[in-house]
Structure formats: C-alpha cells, structure tokens
Image (cartoon, rainbow over all chains, first blue to last red; front, side, top):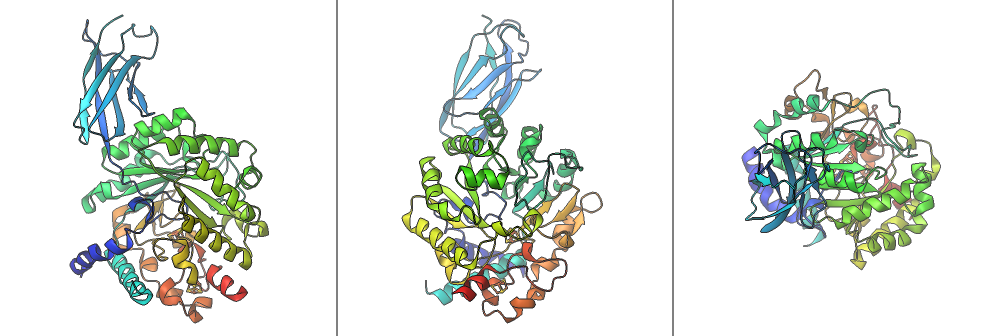
Length: 127
Length: 354
Ligand code: SF4
Ligand code: SF4
C-alpha cells in the first residue's frame, strides 16, 4: 500500500508543491510555524593556533565575507560556523579579545569548492 | 487545469499524504517564557511562566530515534515558545540539531532579535525564521501590549531580509484594529524588502477567547480575502492566507495550494511539558503521549489516528456542509475536547453574510 502511495506521491507533489510564488519552502507552513528550510549551506570548522608556539588560540573571531555570521574560537581554539554555499568564499580570522590570549595578526583565507563541510586549520602570527 | 480535476487530484494528494504519514515538520515548544504579553496568544505564555524551559537533552533524546525512520534533513525542527530567544542556549541547541542532520528554524516576536543574535543563530545553522508584525505601530503595539515591540520588530525584519541564507516570512494576525491599514502595512513591508507575507485571522482560543476586537466580522473576512487576492495579483510581495481554514470560493485567490490541515499527518510537536501533540495550538485533549513516558517515534508511527482519520468531524455544522469533501472538517486547532462541533468556520461566516 505504502509503495503505491510513495510512487503516486512524486506526481501529486509536483502539482501541489511547486505552486508557491517565492519558493518550495513556502508550499506549506502551519499557522504559527515557519517555512521549511530548503537552503544550502556549508559547515566550516577547524582550529586556530599560534604559528610560533603551535598552541590553540581562544578568542579569535572567524567570519565569512559578505555574511553577518561569525564565531569566536573556544578555549581549545576551535570554531564551527555555517555559511551560505558558494563556489568560493573568504574566511577572515581576527583577534577579538585584545591582549587576553596574546596579540595576533589577522589573516584571510580563500576557500574553494565548498561542499557540505570543510575543515580549516589555521595558524596566526603573533603581533 | 480544470477546477474539478484539480480538486480531485488534491483530494488524492491529501489521502496519499495521510497514508504515508511522514513527519516533516516538528515543533519544539522550547520554553513557555515570553518577553511580551500579546492579547491573542494561543499558548497563554508569560514572563514568569511557572514551568521552566525544556532541557535540550530531553528533546534531543526523544527525537534521535527518528533518524531510523527518516533522513533527518527532511525534517525541519520549528523552535517556538513562548519566545525562543529567551533561551540562552538557543545557538547550541540549533547547532546540535544540525550535527544530527536536522534542519531548524525559529518563530519569534522579534523583540530580542539583535544583530548579534542574528549572527549567532546563522552561525549555528538556522535556516528559516518567521517573525510577527501585526500592523502599523499603533495596532502592533496594542496587540503585543508593548510600545517598543514595533521598532524592534522592524529592525529585526531588516536583518532577516538582508540574509541570503534564510527562508523567511513575516506573519500578521489580522484583527478589527488593523484590517483597514493592511494596504499601508503592505507598502511598509515592501519598502523593507520583504518577499513573503502570511496573514491569518485570530482563532477564538487561548487568550483571544472572548475578545471581540480580535475577531473579524463576516464582511471584514471577505475584505481580507479581497485584500490578499489583490496583493497577489499585484505580485510585489508573495502574500497568502495561512493554513488556518478552508475559505470556499476564495481558496484559489488567497493561497498557492488548496486548504489541507496537516496536523498529525506530517506535523507533530513536543510541548514544554513533554507532551507529544500535533500543532502546538491544538486543544490539549488531542495530546498523543509524552516524551517522558513514551517513545516519540512509536507515538508518531502508531497513534495520531484521530487526526489521520477525520470522519468524526462530520458533526455540527460540518455535517451539513456541502464543502465537506474539500475541507475535511477544517482546522484541528478549532476543535474542542467535546469533538461535537467546530468552534468557528470562516467559510460559513462569509457565505452567510454574502
Ligand atoms: S491545526 Fe491549524 S495550524 Fe495546524 S495545520 Fe491544521 S490548520 Fe494549520
Ligand atoms: S463547515 Fe466544516 S466542513 Fe464546512 S467549510 Fe466549515 S469547517 Fe469546513
């Protein structure tokens, strides 16, 4: 029974799910609910460490060009930030906590061929 | 496509979805706390709500078995409340959901939606958001019982519409105080680059019960349908009526797909006390289990019969309704524990005033 239901679903969904003027995400929302998330993004994770000592650096702001989101590295220098999926993007690492964990120079990294997940381990030079 | 064939195919589609009963939309009422005291709140939350937030670990443990039955990325966890932004651990909750493959979104009044919050939620993988704006300043402040809520909501809208990542829409509860200012509100939203706008009327449940200013008259209901139809024809904003009710001859004019209440068909919720329900605004009589006692996956797979088979709704005014086949007994949130008659019917109200 379910197999038949699954087969006919594709055909029926193509009629009733493709009707929204804005996008697929809006074909159904409950009154107090949101659109469904059908967007594409990439998870950029990694660790920031010092070029000189090799030690992890907490308090580094990791941001993605043209996007508002950012993340501050935790006590182990780790970060994870979701960003819009594109063919390439610039990720910037900046010292966000003044001298608290030492002073470091900012660094930009261009990441290409973004899939669903990218690991980016970066080292920063002391200022 | 000819109207009759379209309606027939839609009935097939509905029956098919009911048979498949695949979860795609999961509300999590993460808190009952709220920073506003809106006149129409369906869940009657408050700043000092006696019940605390649900620990995230409890929710996650309950839903993880879903991964055995569904690819998790086909399920959007809609985080609601109360006001979800009152939870300090919201980004951590969202990030953990993404790590397990689920998508997530929030429903917010926008009062606490600052640039910093926006940045942190996006970084944690939030993919969709719905924000309320209930009219121009006076009407919004009245409904939301707060003078600062309008300015804060507008600032939040600017942040949201600038995001290329978010699937978003703005929702407006239409009532007697804002119905005549909808054209100005539309222009305001367009000026803020809003692409999608959902309008709904206020159901006589929760705090809205008995407040006559909140319920549109039959003439105003028709005015609302005409307004939405006009805004859709205008094509500058994707306006639509929410899923809340079957609206007869207006169906094609005010929404993309015909009315279909999916509560318990593709929608479930976990409420703050652990109750397993369909949409959070449904009468608690229809609660199907509790995550602190039952397996969520088991409840979803084997219960919800009362929502999947709605033949029992053929009672009260629905029993005599010539639109029954198309409507299937209306919105689940408009049925009380007595299950003897729907609380109100927009379609019948408009038909009788015509
Ligand atoms: S119960 Fe109400 S909010 Fe939920 S799907 Fe049905 S009509 Fe929409
Ligand atoms: S009377 Fe019942 S079946 Fe008829 S339109 Fe209203 S809610 Fe639907």
